[in-house]
Length: 612
Ligand code: ADP
Ligand code: MG
Image (cartoon, rainbow, N blue to C red):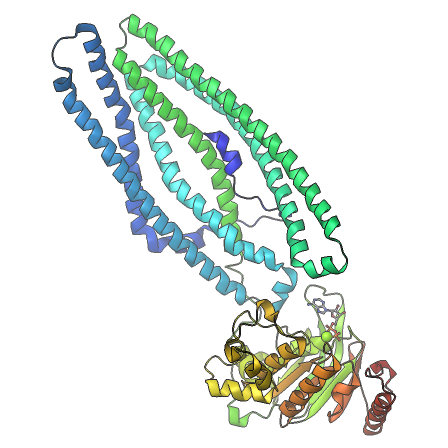
């Protein structure tokens, strides 16, 4: 039995060997507790089934005894004599089937419910983690904790209860009946079985290793295919189909070699273990037969012994598989629980909020310094001070990588400053409710808007869950989006495709603007909102942005001057600090900008050209 296991081992993901988290028993207990009653019932049923299994070989032996008697004497009625025994056996078979059915149903009920609870709790806690957590983790890794790890933990759990319990009981029970049948034969078995099991375990672990390598190779091949299919446009554009085919083919070839090697290994194992098991049967028959001949054992008892010893061997083989499964299940469980206990530095909610009518939307950065937690030695902002007066538009320009987006992230409270404070209407952001801040105060529009793969309606409503249809239409109109939306045959019910793949850049951006505007934010952050657009879409989007900016506190982040013409104030950032322009310089900058446009160049001069 141990043989097939190598083949069925769940997909081993190639995971870098980092410090393995420890299994959290306390947390596991919390998830298990609601199911204790059902679990108890399942355990009772499983134990019952195992005990019935122990009974069966004994009765079979008695039946054989009767058969043997009739082979000798041919007197009396075989049917009458064997009837009660047969009925008894039939009843036991039925009972065994029923018990098995019962505990499997109960276990799958517990397993599935626990898996749902685990996934829900993990997802919930993952969503609450700090942005810095996501900076450091790969999405694929997080998703695999939700899927594969929970799956593996669940199946191990079920297996331990069903197989583990049954196998242990059967081994114990059968050993008792074996020693009652014949002490001498049992001793013989006790010597032979562990030796064979040892060899088998060694071979099994070699096979497991091989199977892991095999799966890693398959994963590698899948990775190549995944990358090529996912980036098919790039592959097509470079006419690299042939090369990708070859790459995939080479990886497939590699996995074929490994798989065939594994196949040979399994075949050898299977063959050898068949020989071993058969030899043990023969050995038992031989030794047992001589005992029968010496009248120390009846034929029926020998039969019982054979069946029971087979059960012991099967159960022990099961247990050895189970051991591997337990190890894998515990480490999968540890990975699931690891992120469940993690608490974020910036909680999602909690803290005070300002009543809407008193909210002015004045923002100040006081001597803020900041470096990203994953790169602590690299200061992005140094002693950065900036005021966004209420209702005014401030433009922030500067080189790419200068820290402009970082300023916006601090305002959204994705991170907290390393030093200094950011205030809203004089209140430290850290004392305010982050959820309130993000959902009601600040509207954020970034360079690459991300939409969800649902309808346009739902995407806009993402900004305000309880918005009425009218509010959605109004926001879309304000964002210059209503027209193109209604030109689609499905209108607002158009599905935008994965990440909004079926829309143009300008359309996506206008939906993102509508989504931000629907919450009527007091503060609007436009982070290079038009820089990825062509000049025609830029004009439409800019028009929407200009309209949306009226009466709000706006921070416009840009590296093109065309975006900042409406700004009341232009601030240049360099080396994580502000070099502010005075009024004359700003006017000069605007003139510079106009003359740049006059020359017919769509692109404006680099901010570094500005007088600082
Ligand atoms: P800008 O928006 O002005 O182009 P950013 O604020 O995006 O600049 O980035 C400023 C600096 O911070 C860059 O050097 C960038 O490499 C670094 N940086 C940006 N985001 C992260 C992050 N999540 N983790 C670590 N470093 C980052
Ligand atoms: Mg940026």
